[in-house]
Length: 147
Image (cartoon, rainbow, N blue to C red; front, side, top):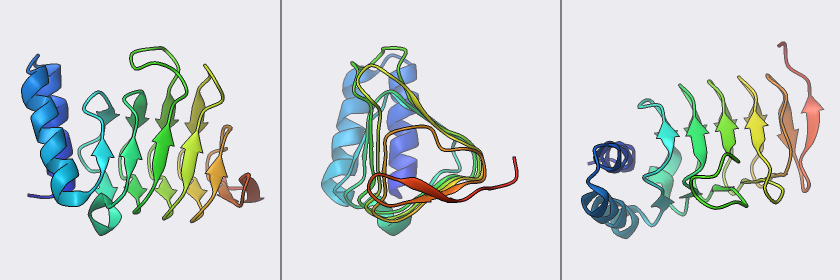
């Protein structure tokens, strides 16, 4: 079973009220693939985790759109409690490179626009425009995309 399928299973179980079972599936995913993929996320079923999502950490308050590719060792962290309105929203067709970090400012949200690319090792702390490519620490736009 793939890490994506285990993640979708944990999310589905949690939405149906089987929180303990969802936690067990999440723990199995973590044990096999060395990741931490929260069951409280809202994730499109066609998400792709490069290299089996090894080392990837995703907070509960994350929304992932369609055709999103997330490579290994990516951290998606929201600096707010699970269930709060503060989120990371990753729109459709986004690519997040290996070792990238997307972290919200305290009690705020971050949106990665449709078709954006986050370079490997980038640290994103603010919104990324649709179609843009961002790299560096802190991340800066190196190419504007068509919106």
